[in-house]
Length: 133
Image (cartoon, rainbow, N blue to C red; front, side, top):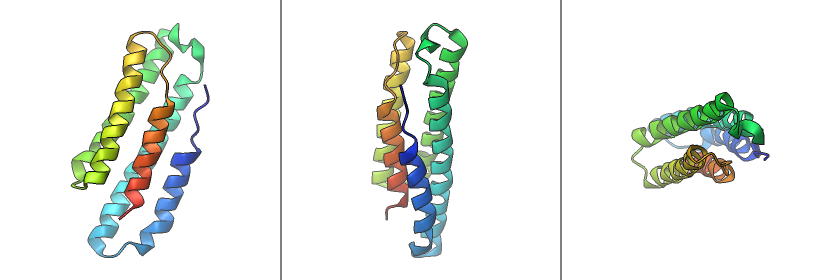
């Protein structure tokens, strides 16, 4: 399974290009904070991809645990964004990511290879929402 990390990386780069056009100090601070979290989430997705690339991870308890840990870290970072936001669109993106994470975690708990494409798609969407007004 290959995880496409280009979408979160592009979103992160777009964020920094978009920061100067955000009006008002408060908006800039919010966008910057969201951007920092988007960078963290991009790293989390990279870690998740590194741990889950090998289909053999299902029989290797330490690799399976690393994938579980990566999913947990991604969920924790998404929660930090949601906790700091009063934006409905951002909270909806966090909810979508959390649902994708939960589905992947459920697959792992049943010793099945998780489908991580919904996780990476939701992480990319969260990044897009961060840069939108």
